[in-house]
Image (cartoon, rainbow, N blue to C red; front, side, top):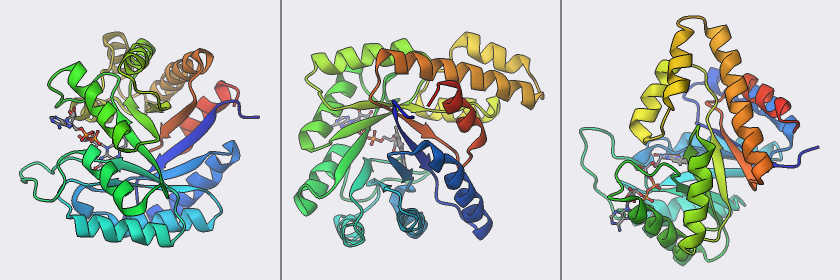
Length: 276
Ligand code: FAD
């Protein structure tokens, strides 16, 4: 039986084959009785229809689906239409983000920061949606200072966010310290750790350099040691991430949110290892 609430994040597949794989992934992860499945959204609305289609399919299967909405490069009118479309479909939970401007492009649009999106969602739809926002235990790469980043999370909470999901991290102390700092800043919403399984060191290093999540030196060196031996690397990754989840669970995290990359195998092993 689950003692920790779980949720799983997907990206909207581009092909019918990808949709098929995602259906299998969902069927496998459904056995853990997740609170919701969330679906990412490309900045500027590039995945608008695919995110919507994936969300509606999840909902039709009887699960709670939470679309992500990123606001950068979008107009108020576009976001308004999207919110009302989700509301009409009975969607009750959103993950509200700023998003990133694709490299080489300049941001155009009505929103600069996620706090403005949260305020807009509340002004358009009142309390209809449970709003999740992003939080950064190792701080967002563009933040001027850690304190400024915390104040930004506070602004999102003050604008109406109900809970937050963190960027992934491999050092649980970063999360514990962040939670203390949030409490000291008057941020009192649940802050759910985002968990990134380890599949591949090149991919993980690329993600981490973009989003500012640290791969500790010992972990990077151990992963590099496996070279092309992916089977051993994944087995080691499962041990490392299971231990992280166990530490977080013992500490008393409210829930765990898994970045699935649309795969279930490694995550199922981790969740079974921590006795969920
Ligand atoms: P914000 O909260 O707006 O913060 C962005 C930066 O601006 C921070 O450095 C903050 O400190 C700073 N800032 C905020 N307000 C001000 C201000 N008034 N003055 C000066 N600085 C300020 N991206 C997608 O495109 N699609 C997704 O589906 C998606 N899903 C995600 C899910 C999770 C759980 C997480 C953690 C991230 C996700 N992202 C997604 C990535 C996210 O869009 C990026 O991390 C983006 O760079 C910041 O988004 P945000 O919502 O945290 O932005």
